[in-house]
Length: 323
Image (cartoon, rainbow, N blue to C red; front, side, top):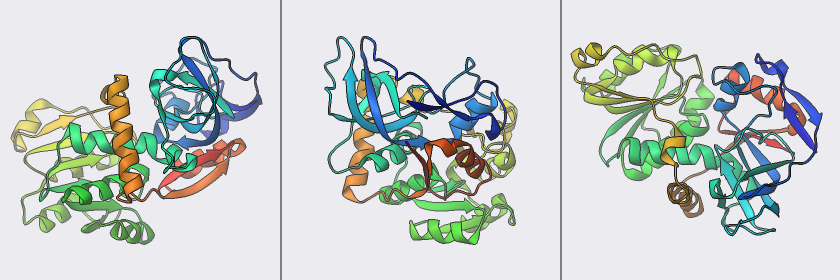
């Protein structure tokens, strides 16, 4: 089968297409013949070495397709089932992938494979951020950075479904129009405007209850200065580089603030948590409450170009590789 591999860390140019043996599922595993593969920022962190992997390696942690082989002891799936997964890998950038049966989920009939691959990791991230990292309530005001991105779009829509007021940051007029169409109440152009000053103006000086920041280093100061008293800074990405260390006394002086660095893995640690989170996401999609935009697709062989677009902030919504 064809798969994307890399032997050394670095830029998108380290990715190459290889012919490799199709993997065979071991005990407790299934093989999925993939129809779509999700491209996520965490893939770039693995490629650059920010999150190290043993090399040489495959890449990617999200995909969807049809089960075509099962290992010993598997009762959760059978051949022919539609299945998706997120955060099991790496190795998703391939025509087929072997994953643990207890880390994959059934895809309901109402959701096609491309939508599943586009929404599963990002949607479960939105679910835990809005419901478990911080149980958002109707009437609260939040800040969402990179609101036109894959997770950002879902956060905007889901937060509006809950009844929150959403302040979104974007980098272009086209992205502003997109997030406004999704329901964002206010839009800030983070390159041209002082984010914290705009947040204070919008909130009458009060700040936001919670800020969701996937950008990292470039937005850290503005995010911290945007929080209300006892507000929560949720740092969940490093698109511009890792955020700086957080000094505890600074949080105290800024209004008894909270800072957290959550990861999806810890919120879907058990099969029961995984199933519940995925069911919530698929339910929101099936009901029409979440519009999943697949902004761009690339052939599997063009994974390098997909990474260039993602890191160049040239993408809107989800990005897929198609085997």
